Image 1: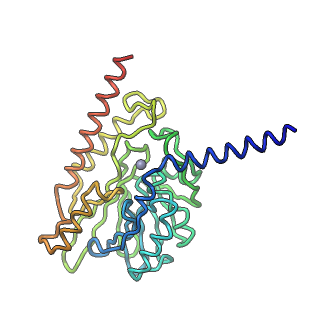
Image 2 (image 1 turned 180 degrees about the vertical axis):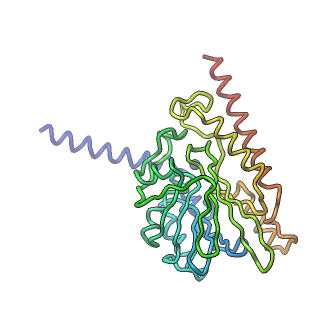
Image 3 (image 1 turned 180 degrees about the horizontal axis):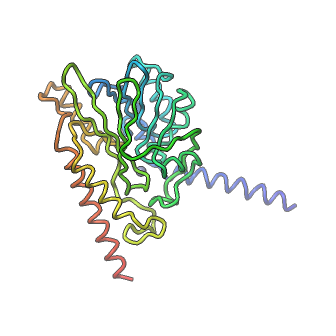
Amino acid sequence: MTWRIWVILFALWISALGQTTMRSCPQCAEWNRPQPPFQIFGNTYYVGPHGLSSVLITSSSGHVLIDGALPESASLIAANMRSLGFRIVDVKLIVNSHAHIDHAGGIAELQRLSGARVLASAWSAKVLAHGGVGRGDPQYGSVSPIAPVKNVHVLQDGQSLRLGDILITPHLTPGHTPGGTSWTWKSCAGNICRDMVYADSLTPVASKGFQFTSSRAYPHALADFETSFAFLENVPCDILLTPHPELSGLWEHIAARERGVTPDPMVDTNACRRLAEHAREQLRQRIAEEQSAGRAH
Ligand SMILES: [Zn+2]
């Protein structure tokens, strides 16, 4: 009976698919470790799990949420908001750094819970709307697909979005993905206002066989990185936040703050420039590796 064979093959394929998904994210459980939420500065709060940022910016007319971490992070993010006294239905806008499962995986569910509008760069919007992994993504073939998100709107580079007294600006910072987006806004406490920067990942990570120096799927990758480095080098930056919180030293800063260190360890006007320098060095090494691998062939 050939249909029996097909059923067995189908079952094997499904189980292999499950194992691949699990194997492809050995760090997910650690990333999703619960983290009590806290105030970063003024109306900006950390509501993500311990290993993946999700940032809430609040106003009396509704809130903005940046990044939704993993699919399994959504309920945790919602609970964190509640424990701070905010309601998820007051989130009116959800935006994203880049369309990978560890930062966009939870957006579909968070949108369902909140009814918020989702806005993303043109490239990321396409990925979010269709789900899966985007064409031209350096990690195409190795990163897990994301669930599709409904009604994704496309944002324009540099065009600020207003919600109540929140004014948040997207800056296209591609390279890690072709649709990478960083975000800037001001948060105030009393009469002190800080320039907040949520800087997207700029790590040159890729699937086997992908070359940043010569990719047909992403031909302008190197030029994109340069644009993004220049942004980070020039942006007014008092408090730097990153999708992977440890990259901006968040936990050290928070620990120092809890020890009573002054001035506020979260404030570091050189943080964005240092991050750019670090990312430039990583790309330099990656290019050298690709070139030496090319010579070896
Ligand atoms: Zn990523």
